[in-house]
Length: 212
Image 1 (cartoon, one colour):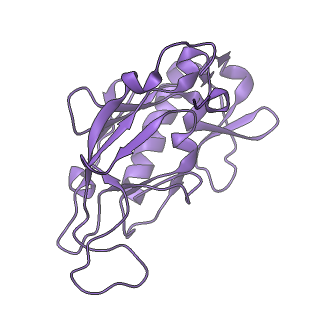
Image 2 (cartoon, rainbow, N blue to C red; image 1 turned 135 degrees about the vertical axis):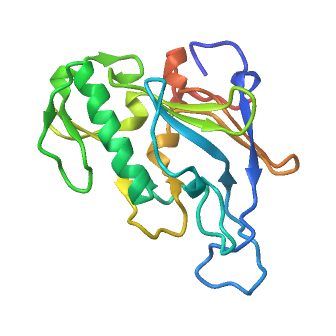
Image 3 (cartoon, one colour; image 1 turned 45 degrees about the vertical axis):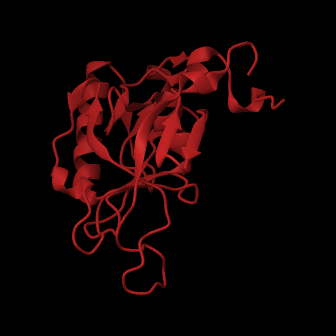
């Protein structure tokens, strides 16, 4: 991936792929496990500070409700309402400390800001980092501004997370926008997901990928 000459697959951090014991498909037979990709999110942090919410939501209950799945269908990450509300609240507070000005929200997003007060960097708008703390040693999926903020109109950027309501099937649905510009490797034989940090950190992008 120009301008890099190194193999970015050597920079992969891994976390286990887990199986939801109950299928999440629209139609399934009793006893069928899910065939979707789930990972264990252990916590969420904003600028290094934990977002306080009920951690039991991150595990499956006896009916297979809860947990975190990866989705390329959902454009933005969808969160259980209690996680969403606290994430938005804490992000607004952290943004204010950085003098990022809040503006009127634009549906379906709950927190929007004046982009002129969030300077552009190599990894997107200079906003507080969001870390998904995953199972595995030092496994963190860090969301910089390029993956956490979406421009909805001129000079307005919004926190790119959606309220999934109080009774979602899955507590966190990690959407496509949050997965952009990073290398993902689904190792089904070893039941693990490998991922890199944002490729923007290395001044490259997925559009620069070259397969030999």
